[in-house]
Image (cartoon, rainbow, N blue to C red; front, side):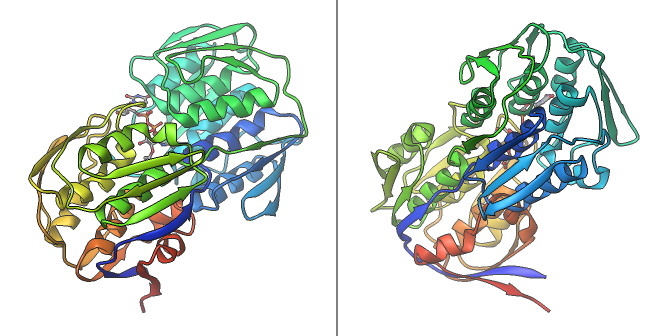
Length: 420
Ligand code: EPZ
């Protein structure tokens, strides 16, 4: 079994380069299925979820050539299956994007019901509502989703909840539909804009991504032999920003988009930190103990749920009592039990948690309960006195590229160890 061993405390200092966005990459790869030919995708994060997506696409007939560690050529001219490798698709959430993309490409698909991090209930009713409105029939049984359509017809879809996955999935299914599709109450996350930019680069006609109304004018086919670079990862960048604050360090992020980080910057300034942006880099530094804060997670441009555990570490060390209200997921405070093992004083109940700030955290053996919980535990380990051992690295490896190397270059004493 692998574990991360971190000996702290360390004040992180130096530069870190942000990778391509996981949640954009794992939607853009299935989007390539809509191209009857090849394209090149650059700035892909080299993470388990990207490799898994590539494996699933190969199972459907795609030919993938790795040009570098972060760049692939993908040829989807021979998509010859309409059943995805079911065991692989069940392993992660983003396999739901195969439904939208394959409805567009082959008019049918069977995938295993998407798994992913355990954050509470994760329904896909809004995805299904969108596919059905476009004319598809969707059957969910025996752990699989089976979707079919004769002809996708553009329509007006109002999402009952702001959903990243449903917005992207309906966009995918609409690109090659007949006529115009309008998605109302769409999500606005940077990766939604990125998927739309990818598709538009490939010849789609999508307008309004990044606002809450997206209009997709169906096109006959997409263009081949184009290349695209995935947007920098907002959440990875936010993770390092919060690591700088928690460790009272001074970090400069390279290859990020500061505007995507405005809501995090605002909170960091509120709790006494400093942020300075220049072009595509961002310096974050902290010279004092953080002040208490109140946080509510919200869809973009609100404070992201995917940074809630990381700011939870900051608030567990803050001066005063803070409150976090998690409004997206039912069960995203599991990490607080692990932080309490390190000396934090957090009481979580339902979708709220109270953080009574402590002066110090202390190293302990802890278990990552999901991807962002894992990132939070790394930050906690870096700030804590003594040795922290983090288990369940499979979650962390799904979404962060070379995480221990990146933290190590910032001065952290962090090692991956194989335990007998
Ligand atoms: C995406 O999940 C991300 N995953 C999550 O990232 C992220 O936490 C989440 O968006 C919110 O930003 C991927 O992109 C693969 P949603 P997604 O649909 O698309 C409800 C990470 O750590 N809902 O925006 O599954 C749902 O229950 C993670 O990288 C419905 O009710 O999230 C939730 O309360 C994990 N019906 C809310 O909407 C639906 O059909 C938002 O979910 C869909 C969603």
